[in-house]
Every structure is written in C-alpha cells, then in structure tokens.
Amino acid sequence: MEYNVVKNADKIVKNCPYVVNEPFKYKNKWHDLFQNQNPIALELGMGRGDFIIEMAKTYPKINFIGLEIIDSQMVMAVNKLHNLKLPNLKLINIDAQLIDKIFGKEIDTIYLTFCDPWPKKIDERKRFTHENYLKLYDKIFRKNKHIILKTDNKGFFAYSLETLSKYWYIFDKVSLDLHHDEAKIPNIMTNFEKKYYEEGRMIYYLDASFKN
Ligand SMILES: C[S@@+](CC[C@H](N)C(=O)[O-])C[C@H]1O[C@@H](n2cnc3c(N)ncnc32)[C@H](O)[C@@H]1O
Image (cartoon, rainbow, N blue to C red; front, side, top):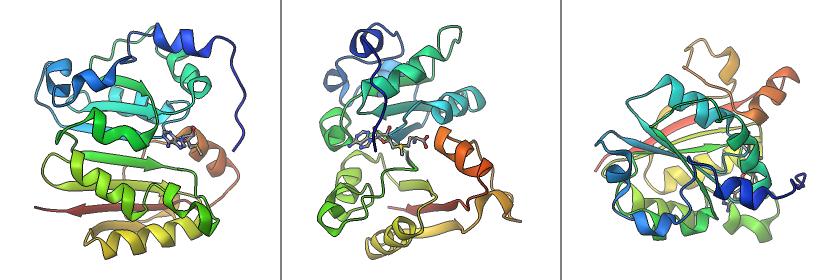
C-alpha cells in the first residue's frame, strides 16, 4: 500500500511526548514506564492512530501501545494528541518484527487491525498471523495469549482462523459482520474501518485466546 510522505515526519514523531524513542531500553520495564501494573494492550500497525487513541480514552485502566513502521502515518496520530492527556498511551515508530527486542513477557492483548493481508504466497511470512509472528507473540505475552483481529479481507481472515487454530488458540468470539452482529460486540473503529463501514463492506472479527 502507498502512503503520502509527510515532510519532517521523523522529527515530528521524535519530538512527541507520547512516542518512546528508545523502546529497546524499556524491555521488561513497560509497567515502570506507565507507573502502574495495569494490563498492557499493543496494536501492531496502528496507522493514523484513531483506534488506539479512542481505546486509551475509553479504558483508562488499561495501558495502550500503538506501534507503526511508517513515520508519515504516525504523524497523523501525533497531530491528534496535542491537547490530550493520556498517561495510559505510548507510541512506537518501529517494525513489528522487532517486538521481542522491545518487550519481555509483559503484553496482555495484541490488536491486529486491518493489517496488510499480503495475498501473494511469496509474502505469506509478512502476514501478522503467520506462524513466525505467532511465535514472536509467545515471547511477549505476559501469561495468557489474547489476540483481537479485525479485517475486511476474507482471504486473510480465513487464513488467520486457520493459523490461530493450528496454534491451539480458542475462538472466544467470531463475527462475519461485526457492524451488524446481533451479539453487539463492543467496538471502536479504526481509520480504515470507518472508510470501509461507509462503503458498506463487511468487517470480519475474531477474539482468540490461549490460557496457560
Ligand atoms: C492497512 S493499514 C491499517 C492501519 C490501521 N490499523 C487502521 O485500521 O486504520 C496497515 C498499517 O500497518 C503498518 N505496517 C505494515 N507492516 C508493518 C510492520 N511490519 N510493522 C509495523 N507496522 C506495519 C502500515 O504502515 C500501515 O500503517
């Protein structure tokens, strides 16, 4: 996917107080950084940040970390934070492949929201629900594993159901039409989701866990 380049994005991101510029320093110390022992939820590929910012506002007793590889995307999140006071939110501008270098066993929930589906077989390893990623997640989950995934991509959703179940995750909730599901799953929309919702696209959802 192509994204617009924002001038000086790297500097804007670096100077934002919500951004943790040397995340490797905080491995096993994220609760100290948040100054509490509340659960930590991590969103991989947060894009423009609407979801993680709204989640942090709505659930002050949960710590949220938004991770995004493209600084020009992260700038959009940074710009939304100027007048907000959210001590339970941090942002990291880095590749998700490095999460095990940044976190010890301290993450309670991972959100995978509209992540790139990488439909070509040759790119399978880049999918956030590829077994290699699931192994990475094992290294950072505090105790139980908990993944919440939303996507508009049927193929990627089917693939994720398969890889997660092969990896012994249990599906606590599955919806093939999140916005019209009678089960009324509580939901905060991401940027991509808002666009797809307006277009009337179906949103697929799963909430999977593995209890140790
Ligand atoms: C389709 S967008 C979805 C953004 C947001 N989650 C939403 O729903 O609006 C996927 C995002 O994942 C980011 N991304 C892709 N690969 C990544 C990686 N390896 N590490 C971190 N972010 C990544 C992209 O830069 C992009 O912002």
